Length: 200
Image (cartoon, rainbow, N blue to C red):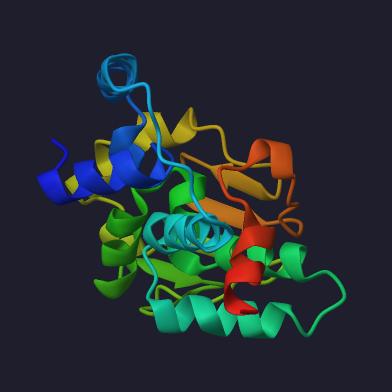
């Protein structure tokens, strides 16, 4: 069930912010609201940029300080947008979510914090850890028989992981085989607007 605060955030920022907003029930609710209230306020450039920044923050579950750090590092590179996207996508908690091991990024962060995940055989408890090409994350042997993973094994096996990951649902492992590619038309975020916000 979606809590009221999260529901309000989804209404303001869009259904791509939280996984539980991406349901037919939420879409129908939004359609009814839009039909009743057709007028939408026009956003200023600053308002639009702030909205996009907030989308990224809430979707990935990161703080303002963390996002600013990612943006600062990205602007120093030749391809800032790609670098920012890579930094966000290769976070350990996001990679676990993308692999299908957790239903939400928040659940993925809890898995990491509780010591259920290893990287290249070593336990990792830092959700913001950035993975590199070739890294293998897996569920710790002592955690594989827990209901959290046993009950979800069939779902994990059938989960469609992105192209940059290779996931084995039976062994509960996932390997980073490439760098995540940013395709503007395929993503919920307007990352250039995020850079514009921080450049003000």
